[in-house]
Image 1 (cartoon, one colour):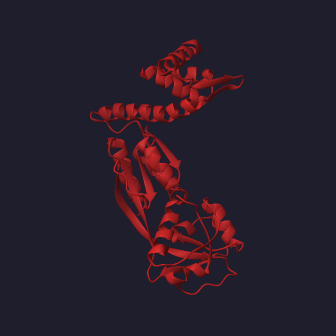
Image 2 (cartoon, one colour; image 1 turned 180 degrees about the vertical axis):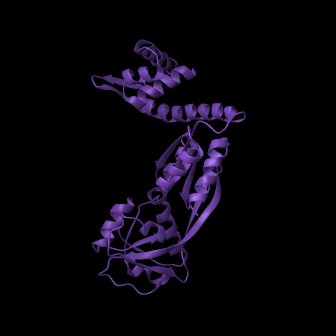
Image 3 (cartoon, helix red, strand yellow; image 1 turned 45 degrees about the horizontal axis):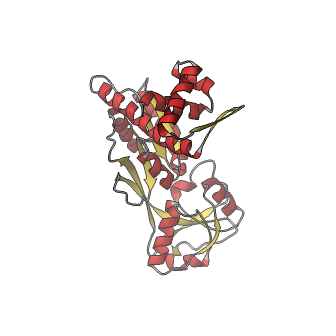
Length: 292
């Protein structure tokens, strides 16, 4: 498979057509079209469906698009890594953040990155832990912050911080000063669906202490979840970090879960087969500093 063919295909898929892809690649549309067609012939599969509005990916094309993004990203990383051996940090770094962390720290991370690394590019992708694990393995991220990640032989994890979980309720639903874990089943819960890392953590701790949970609603978005708690639709189990910021509706109150506490753990994850570039390593150190 020729890298030029792959790059042409990925750019066409990204832009949904040949016109913008050709301009980005600084090639004529006929050359780009020929490169993509040669790739289809080599793979013996149709990768694109052409229509009046542009192109869409076939199932085979969608799979190759995921792999292709990672391959091209890794090639870029290799070039930048070699360049950094003789120059100051340069190039681009892409990091993954959970929504609650992104909401609190994106502005600070971007501001500090631009101060420390002028001329370098930064990409930030928000996602859930299970999604960001896949992005790391595909080469779409340099590193990611993950909550309670499942072990994976292809990834390395380093702890960043731990936080206890609290039961969160609306103002008109009273709570004791502390919530015993053994009583957690008495509260109708609004929690994320599987395989969300928070859901896995809550269920594993409840099962360990033989507590049967009462899950009323499964909501994956933190903002929608908090809005539902605020109107009394149920209770949430969250860290205090998730309750900070202007997006949190007024009137919520919370109590720590005790005997025992449930702690959520934040890790930085990297892919074993892709060492961090100098820029990525320096950015990781900066992000750790932003996390306090």
